[in-house]
Image (cartoon, rainbow, N blue to C red):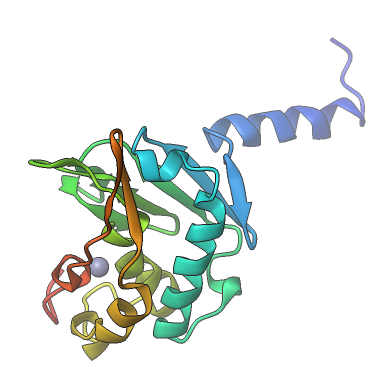
Length: 175
Ligand SMILES: [Zn+2]
């Protein structure tokens, strides 16, 4: 094949797309969202809107804004674990992009996005702090108040979305 100036950028763009893997299902303020789960909450038509609301609350809590998630990918993964660093037993991960598990080992699919560890991982996107030194890793009550009392979803219908702030917490100074 004759290589000329117009084919090179095309080939480069193609390689970049393949390297990044799955294209996002939708975008929220410049963040690509990948729905890689059958959890009913993530398949709802209103999921993008609900996710935007949760992200807004999380960014407020951490003192961030939409720029902190712009250009990042947020993946909602099937199953109770995501790979993170050297572990394959994490429930969420921030390594420049965000991945969160959407089920729980015993009860199965989480009924709502608010029950995932998204709030925690957005914290890393805003303040970094890999070693969890900031006291806010243990003080999620304002977020709980903002997100309390929402509807969750199972394959059989609506249930309560029950927030346990302990899921978002991380003991200080521990990795
Ligand atoms: Zn963390």
